[in-house]
Length: 89
Image (cartoon, rainbow, N blue to C red; front, top):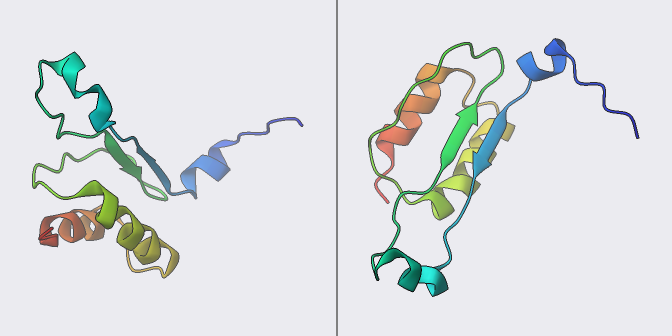
């Protein structure tokens, strides 16, 4: 299968990158729980980045975020930032 990545596909795509941390490896981190999880969202036509400093629970937020994207409720960076800041979980 040949990959044909083009700027048009990237520009029109939403991409969510995240990861989890397994609690069973807590001893590797001096028994401190790792609470910061990588979480990056790129929206269609987005050209610049924005840091979200408001804490949120990534696992429950992800399902809601994907639904918001699929339903067309988050269409730009301002919408996404407001959505993240409104999280109370």
